[in-house]
Image (cartoon, rainbow, N blue to C red; front, side, top):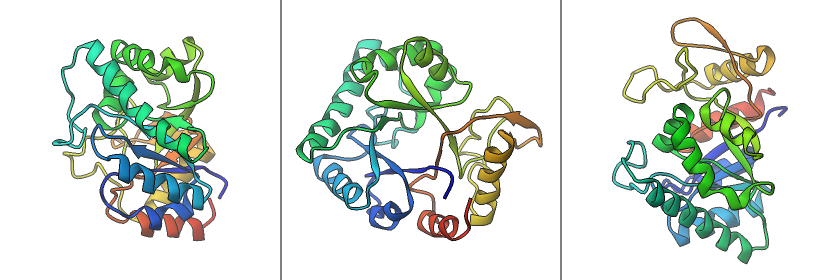
Length: 236
């Protein structure tokens, strides 16, 4: 395929073997919202087998809510947590002599950084040691993207293959019935429009400029493996 696809993995669904053959990179849960040493090792081993780039997927330390609820943490505690999570995966990656390809925040932390410059700056402080050697996956036009560029980070714009967008390029809340795009053909058309037009159709019918170097299909999408197979059979 002409576009790069990524999935979030190591989140307890044990479906990685079905996803890895079709994706270019994976973001591995590293203990914040899901995951432990064993799940990280299994994900890394599968990524090596399928020549898939690996990235760290830190989140708010909140397994109860799967990292999808914002947390009121002081800056020092958040920096410590993010560093601890990324270092846990990097330690395992070193055992297999492979580098981290990227870092991508998960869930509420990802969304909070997109819209809040202060939160973005805290996160960048947490991953400062990776600047220059690891990419950051960030949404186009976001506060985290602007701050990362100004601080010299190597970024890749990410868009979501399976999620609908609001007019401000935030994702439609998962509490809404139209948050997730379910049908494979609809997901393909969603991706194609962003690639070909560099625009996304929002839930209001508006067209907004967007850029994407990689597209995420969530590993916990109800039809993740089916969608990836479909996309592999219908060239993008």
